[in-house]
Amino acid sequence: MAIEAAKWQGALSSLGFSTITVAGDGPVDHRLPGLAIGADVPPTRSELDSVLADADVVVVENLCSLPLNPAAAAAVADCLVGRPAVLHHHDLPWQRAEFESCPPPPVDPHWSQVTINELSLRQLADRGIAAVTIYNSFEVRGVPSGAAAEQWADGSASVRGKVREALGLSAHDRLVMQPTRAIPRKNIAGGVDVATRLDAVYWLLGAVEDGYGDELAAVVAAAKCPVILGSPDEREPIGVGDAYRACDVVALPSTWEGFGNPTIESVVHRRPLAIGAYPVARELAAFGFEWFGLDEMDLLESWLSDPDPGLLDRNLAVARAHFALHDLPDKIAAALPNW
Image (cartoon, rainbow, N blue to C red; front, side, top):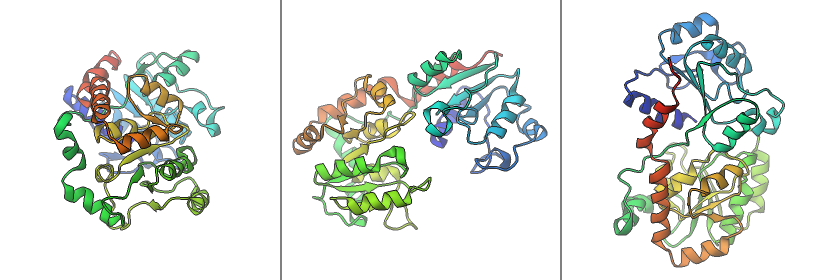
């Protein structure tokens, strides 16, 4: 979510806005601890006014969407009544079992409601809330296709080789990389199964969260393929871009994602994607992406044995047409509330 917020900030700047960031913690312009998840006390009205009073429009990133800090969400919504704002919804309460009985986001005639998928847009409409969809966006300019693409995707041979060496892999080992956190809905067991069926090493890039440690340990103990968790050297974590360069297959076996950035990141980095059938994955695939379902590992094995660069080129063309970062400013401009 922080990555998408930064992209929005850049897009708003290109539209002529001077932007400031406000959050409970992290590298932002203004910190209001009461906005943080788990904060004991929400920000006061005077604290909010002090940082928002001069804003022409306020973009609220998921705070009023998923009830992780309901008191802070209520305080921000109250502060913004009658003022131009965009509520940018990455998640909605009923999309998580633990929040399914919570109310929908607040509304105001001066606010725009923006979702990151059409499923959420329809679900808001069912509750009487009008919204627009702006899908997550990605840098696709400068990404080549055709003959020059493979060398670009691998980086220099030393980058790919250096990462694989750090992981204890040879140039001939097949590597399936899952660029997610370890939590239940990411379906780690499904990712391990992808690697097993492809006779590959499984690499989980992200950290363990939400008390998933014991279950992850059980999945790893039962794995029938080699498993790598995180970066071998925590002092020098492997960057996401280099992880894509090092792998042969990207796995996103999730049972739920509001979007799932690896869908498009895998395309930009020219790697085949093994993907779970979560609802928004089907929505994204309808744009024309050629991905491999979790039940299509025979097809993926055949592709790996005789790669077709045309599939990667076609996927990139779809990403350029529908998910390009350089199109984001115009999309945001069309969704901004009138003031």
